[in-house]
Length: 611
Image (cartoon, rainbow, N blue to C red; front, side, top):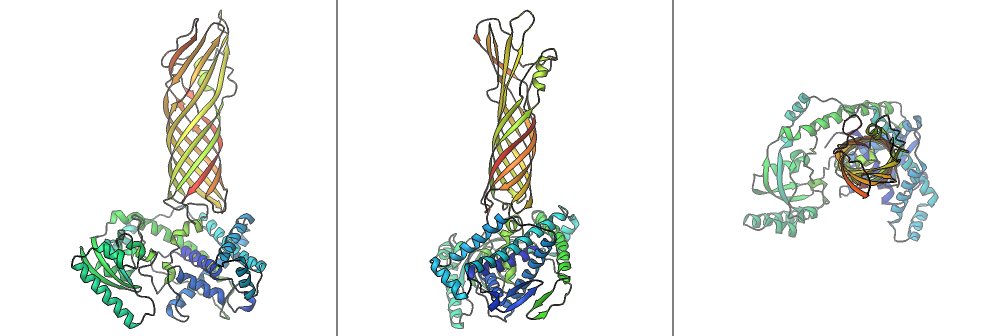
């Protein structure tokens, strides 16, 4: 629905390559006609045909015959995607962008393994290669070249995105104007369907038979038959049939225009037939609502912001095409500036829905432009940012840290006249977190954390009294919340900024007084809020980028006060009664200080990241 050249470029060429690799073993270019040349790279007729077929296969459709309007449109999209990818890869070479050998080898091995799965045995795979006249080494080199080009293009695309401002200003007036221009697009409908599929090239007799069956079922439904039961029995859209034909609520803009017109023409609480390209639908309309500006305004604003950013990308691509040498079907293609494109209304993200044309059986694929309806939009975040998870997923993290604390707490408690001799005021911590991916780069979550301060000893001899020592132990734990911002650095690394806070309780904190005449234990109670900020370098541990190691450094501020002692005498003798709460030498409330710089290692797991 959205007019986004970035999506088109990546979606088209991802399908170009994967479709070409998975469909069959590619034939060598020396025996296949070259139909497109872009500077030093080329595409053969076989590669082009496989890519076009993949576009339609992604929608559950069979590619139309060459020369038809639908085929030519898909062919145009594939060619444009190839041109853009080659030019972006060349720009990556100029910028001296490097692709890690490990990432490239992993992707190559995955592609080759997927191809081998198309054959029952390794021997059949070898025979297929021999039939095409190529060796496994030749095939691996061909896959290497295609994947390297794609990865370079993706990398330079990320770089160009980061060069843009983090946000583009869109006024409320612009949002209101857009909404006013598309008022019907955000009308909402809740409905159920029964699909009677009509395959392409069906005979007139078969079509009449399907129409008769649909009308007969509709008559029974109007006579009182149960819609859910009939949907499970008759509907050829399996995903909705399993739910009794029920679809999630949708906006008009989420539906194919022809299907939307038919559905919205049916009155509320009524039944009707809707003819579509892939068959006939019996539709039961449960609810219909008018457009709500407040509900859709955020989605419109985000769409307009991205549209403004995309214009910068378009100008950049046009600049690359202007200087490129392109030959299509043996003819040099002269550069022509791109014409303006119409602004399309955005689909809303406010209510995640499974649109009919995105279900497994596809309700209404758009024949005029199959590329825009290819179900690859959900994969864009991981294609643009392979290190980022999809929105709506979760990440789980476990980590440990080392701390460097100040000594101000005991210095204040004893006062400047007493030498505290505390040793090392250091400690460590463990934590676990569960984050929700609000946006691929913005995560919000909860955590639990435990902090241990290494034991600190104070030795001193009061005037006229036996010498003794006091040993302080401090540990705290508590729940908290956190927010993370992930910034991709390359295809294997993120830069992570984290801010959070929580409420901490002393756990096992105590002071033990030891001397020749007395041994005392005072267990300390207290709680307080604390905050933390850190920066980390996130390195992925696997090729699928589902697990990562974060090397982080940060600063925590946490002082727990007041301190309430619970005194226990373990050995007779004179002892000092501790005040409640503990007070410093100047009369202020004493505290245990967990503030300081920390450094640590986290292991994070990306749950349901998607591929």
